[in-house]
Image (spheres, rainbow, N blue to C red):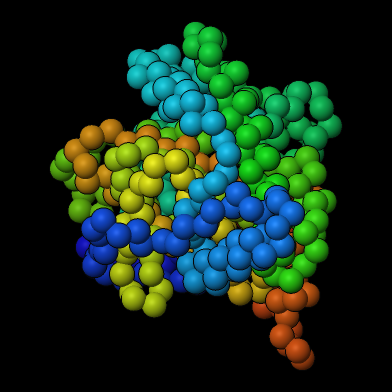
Length: 344
């Protein structure tokens, strides 16, 4: 390996990650932010959380989130249901194939996505879930990634578990976006309209044991930046997530931290903040010899919302770096690039 990795973004920004030096060990390589005081009335404690979020977003756009209040039993049920689905025979999984869904919901087979340009397809399989919208709803006809979900009927607890978790993620996103708004010197409700009828995708991921690579550049998930505004990641105890350190020119191993989520910003938020807040390259390499499971929740927002430079991110006398675009337009661009087909 050692070759340059370029992650092309749909808004005229290019990041380059070079090399294979990886920082590991027991020390956490990302900051930890306890958000328990964010909804509270203690202004001093609230301000400290906001400052911690701001510092993390100005650096790598990644941090561990604790103090979120989500029941650990729910998290365990999500992992159990995910493992139960992926353990099914391939023909059963393909009955729920994403290719059969106009809303891009359901099962994505192993090597179904290539996130890193000029690399082998990703060594993972996934399952996509979104907001439940009827097929005859006008939103399903109008917007990208909008429509009915595809549910595995032979797993009776699957749907209820995932819908409960999806609702918990929506609530957590609302708290995080309030913190982000305050960190940018905005009113706490600045992102309220952005959260109306949003594009938001829950994705279950399974990485098989990767003991020997048939291709030297094969990864569980290739180096990439996320497309949307903000991602909430639940990962199991296996590890494998690596985050690019711009300043140290190395990969940082984001080891699992019990009871936490990993939060990161996507391309949309970087664009919205005029490049001030970072959408950072990351990847997954499962070196453990074991199966790995993770559950990212990608929040992209109201498809009709206009993404234009936030005023507090525009220097005096300066001009925005990126042209305005809708959430819908941005997401279509990014999906088309990664799947190499037109989502327009």
